[in-house]
Every structure is written in C-alpha cells, then in structure tokens.
Length: 114
Image 1 (cartoon, rainbow, N blue to C red):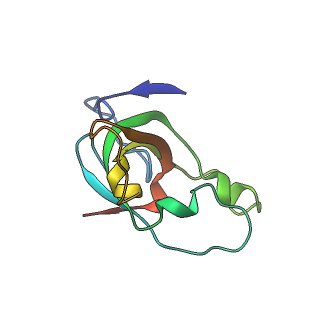
Image 2: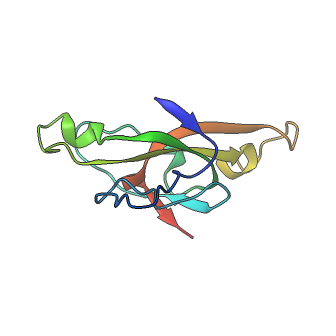
Image 3: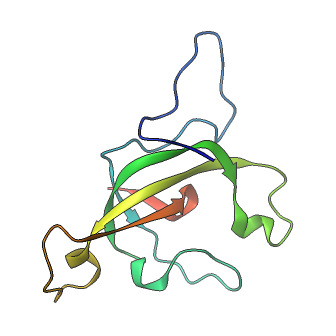
C-alpha cells in the first residue's frame, strides 16, 4: 500500500465511489469504537474507547479484512488510517517520556469522529 500523509488527491472530473473518499484527515481526533465482535477482528482490546489523532491516510482504499474473513465484503473498500496515541491515553499511570506514543493502522469502520 502506498502511504500518504495527505488526504486523497481530488482530480477534476473524477467522482469517487462510496468508501473511496477518506472520512478522516490528518490531524482529526478520533475514538476507537468500543465493540465486542464475535470472531475475527483486528483492533487490540486495550485501544477500544481510546482517543488518538489521525497521523496519515493510507492509500489506496482497502478491503475490510474483518468482513472479508467471513465472505461478507463483496469488494467494498474503505480506508486505513495511522492513528497516534500518547502513552498516557493508553495507560494513565505511564511514567515514561511525554513524547512516547503508539502508532497503529486502524480500518475506518472502527473509528468515530470526536
């Protein structure tokens, strides 16, 4: 996948299909959804409900691996985003450097705007 720190480039005369335009942009604050799906999912439990910042939109849009694992995706694509979390957002009693953080790529369906 080509990574981009910018949102998708708009090209005059091109109309993007549903899911091809990123919902979030670098700098947006987002919360990881708090869900308990049964079966296959790709978001660590310790990040559910945590607030981070979109660092990058991952291009191009990709297939939802969670739905694809069960054959329910039908080719629909959305974006992955690199989300940055300060360590104190994940572990409130973290005693390391305030510059320490965690970066993780999360699929769009797990993100909620703040």
